[in-house]
Image (cartoon, rainbow, N blue to C red; front, top):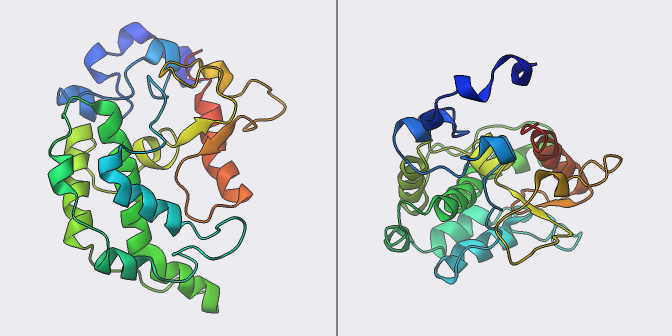
Amino acid sequence: MLSKTITLRQIPKATRAFSWQAAGDKGVPSIFSNLEKHGFLPSSKPIAVLPSQFNPLNELLDKMTHLQNGKPTGLLAKNEFRKVVDKDFPDLMHEIKKVDIKDARLNAALFRDYSFATATYMLEPCHHGWGANNSYGRGMDFIPEHLAKPMVELAKRIGYGQPILDYAYGYSLNNWVMKNDKNPNSLEYDNDDLVPDPSKTIGNLDFVRKFYGCDNERGFILVHTAIVSKSHK
């Protein structure tokens, strides 16, 4: 295994960010900075709800998810996500510029949430194409400016460099909360608390952002988080 052949001394401190060395090499603060304690998980708990100045994004993503209370009534289910983004979603670049570039945790959460919004905007037609005739068809060939500019800015801030939904900052490793959090008021956590019962791999985990919102999606995303929770050993 890789963990058996590479020691921590062989990994330069500046490159111990999970973003494949990008953040460390560019001097950008990274949420993946404590390899010894957390392995390739964030060094503190991910932000589940963005600060109030970003409530429009919180609300948009809450309403986006296909299943709402088990029923297909979300914006994605009704093929209305793009319409709402185009008509009602504001440009929040002025708020993003107020965020300290050194606030790695908030910048990472913003990147995650804008990534989900952007991916949904691009692929909503494919979701409905598959549902209608088992053919994904074509996604959108453009992203509106009030999604595109934040994505580019946030990708630079986290040092990832690519304005797309990625595995670490977006889809999985920065996209979890503990159902039973022993210390809800603390940003610190122990990796073993994510999977306290090995017979229930994701029993204590839930995802923050999701597309469909079903148990299969939860398992698909969070099994990776559960596996990586052992990467510090």
